[in-house]
Picture 1 (cartoon, rainbow, N blue to C red):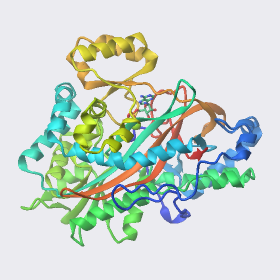
Picture 2 (cartoon, helix red, strand yellow):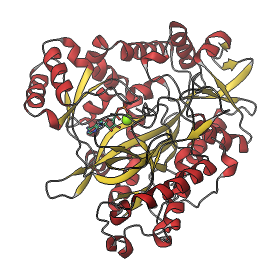
Picture 3 (spheres, rainbow, N blue to C red):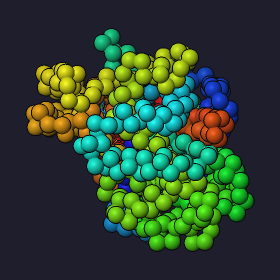
Picture 4 (cartoon, rainbow, N blue to C red):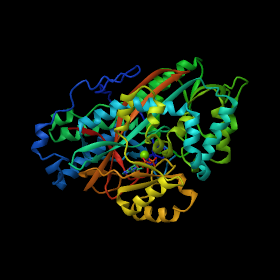
Length: 525
Ligand code: ADP
Ligand code: MG
């Protein structure tokens, strides 16, 4: 899901960073892909001169220059508000540091960037369709919930809410679809989805502040043309627009937005970026933990939600996607929130729609056609981004997948139903797990996925306390999507920006929060 790479709950101060004009228009109504305002498909002659088919070439050779550039980049990042709370003091903003980032923006083929943007509204519709299809969710998750307690508990809440009747009438999706660039046999890169995060998709706030940092680095090098190619980006603004629309449709001028927060939140500045956007529209946000909801949350006879006596219009989860985040009381609190008519982002069905098991079933022949009937072009755009995904349910199909993975372990990833990074198994670890699982029904709580192998490139990953050195890296591109549905009518469906995260190739898994990936910007080529 979102972000264990992000799961340290990550972070913001908005008034200190300049606002850039977004390069991409975001469509404000359904199905409208407007495309880039200026072409991003040009190859820059300057870049090609310095040997930049996959990287920054000779710029990476001069150690002294890299160190000086890094000092400048870090100071600019701090000035822009690219911030995290520290590991030592995750609940306090007294001492903060910069969020890790790359020294240079990483090269991304413009065509793949455009493809990822173009398919985002399709993914929004798909997630929304899955969340409304109780029969599909029930059938898809039936084997998983027998063996995976966390998914089972979420599913239980879903069933309880269905049985009582869903009080919520407006639905808000804030998601992020993540991709890597698979190297084709002929060497060309292809966009392949890693996963879609339907809960707590993070870094939309910090991602708006990193373009200025990379422009700064390139300007220091007098590469002003290259600096101008760094795309502007403001996901938190778009995410806040979604929340605003939902809040308006809820229709109670004094109602609040309730942000479900973790006690220890290193990524607070990322979250504040959204809060700041809302406050500027006079929409007030209160931050509370599940524990607070358990103690002070209540429903009235119409199932309106109240916190500390104030009505809540929208509940925005930045917690609640991992088993460790739920005590018995927290599960009670989640149930209370789900039973209410407040607009949950996401509601429990949409969280389930983001599970790895659902992702795997969506790749099965005929499933997209069933969920999105009469939309063959949408189906084709979605399917083009799917990597190989395999069920491990008991039976011949699962046996076959296990045999193939054991025969070529480097080509597969074993994934449990978890979010937040660091849970997947690769290589020898995957082999051992498969040997152990293969005769047990427990294997149904996992899926197998084709391993994406992007072309590595050189960059420096800047982290507090770490020396500046060039390492071989790969990137993961995320596109933020927003939709709002009122009853059966989709009233908003758009993409609202991107996130590029880059990590050293020696790490198979893990995100920014896990200390593996760092923030980056696409340099379109
Ligand atoms: P999570 O919900 O924990 O974020 P992901 O599916 O995003 O789970 O996997 C975590 C990380 O593992 C990704 O950010 C990516 O670096 C790596 N990864 C996941 N799936 C693949 C894959 N199919 N091929 C290569 N790397 C992968
Ligand atoms: Mg992920």
